[in-house]
Every structure is written in C-alpha cells, then in structure tokens.
Length: 242
Image 1 (cartoon, rainbow, N blue to C red):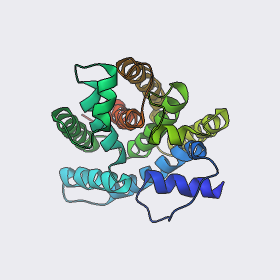
Image 2: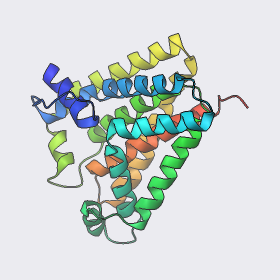
Image 3: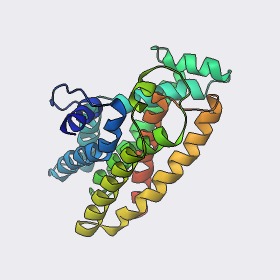
Image 4: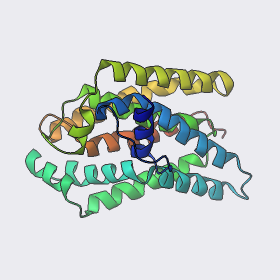
C-alpha cells in the first residue's frame, strides 16, 4: 500500500519521493485525490504568502502548480487539443496525439488554459486552491474507470491495469473527506465542486470518446484534469468579492 502511495506521488508530482514499484499500476488511482490534496496544500501556502501585489501572487501560485506537477497534465491537454480538434478520422487523431511535435491547437489551448488559471487564481479565495487539484485528479479516476481506452497499448493502458471498483471507492472516499474538511474548516461552498467535476467528466469524456472512436487515452485524462481544475476555479469565481 505504501509503495502504491509513493508511486502515485512519483508519477503525478516532481516531489523527491524516489521510485517505487506498485503492486499493480491501476492501484495508483486510489491515491490520486490524496496527491491532489498535497498539491493543493502547497498552492494554498504559496497564496498565503504576503506578496506585494495580487498579480505576483497569482503568478507564483501558477508557477508552483506547473513545477510541482511537471506539466504532466498540461502535456496531455496540449496533445488532446491537437488531436481532438483536427478535422480528420479518429485513427488519424490518435496518431496526432502520439506525435511529439506541438501543433497550433496545442499552443493556443495551453496559452488559454494557463492564462485562465492565472486570472482566476488572482480573484478566488485561497481555499479553492485546495479543492481544484483534488477535483482534477478525481476526474482522472472517474474518466479512466468510466470510459474504455481508445488504444490497445500505451501509458494509459498500462496504468489502467488493476483499476477496479476498490480503487474508485477509495478515491471517492479521499475526495469526500478532503472536501468535507475544507468545507468545515474554511468554506462550505467548496462542497459544490463535485457537481462541476461530474459535468466535466461526463461532457468532455463523451465528446472526446466520440472523436477518438469510442474511448479515451492517457492524454484525454490529462485534459480532463486540467479542465476540471479550471471548472472548479470558475465555480469559485461566483463567490469572489466584487
């Protein structure tokens, strides 16, 4: 179990936890929300530093967010933009998403998502920086469990080996516990975040699966993570002071 937790941190973050071999790759999904909670605590801590101006605080949080995750999900989001928005066959979209080269749609998408996060971080309450990374990683668990894979091999297929109901239940329990704690200690409105999460996974998952011939890929999970994080921050925007 500890090896699975360590492997989850090694896969999802740049924290110096060292390499650990999980019992089965799919067991890592149970710990995804907990990893998101740790990321959120770091971001919250950075936001609470008395920075001279709001824009500097937002930039510091965004830089910490990217560095802490190694841009893993941003890479998947960019690849998804290139593939999913191409007017070609599903088979060709899968080929584009495997291409290491960065296309125009990837650049545009990454600029927009990073700019969106920067703007939102500057206006939302810091507590939402706790919720957003948890929601993003829980979204990946739901997507991996709820949608078939579009390929027969690859990183996404490898990490789904061993993913079952037990991992999904554990991930959801971690998510509920962390959101409940954040809501009780800080702001009950974070409990609205699961609604955004479910809608994002359902809407984007169905659309992406249709574009890819009936399933998702590892890049799709990264895109869902990024979109869920932005969606959570957008929800917080409705509660930001005017």
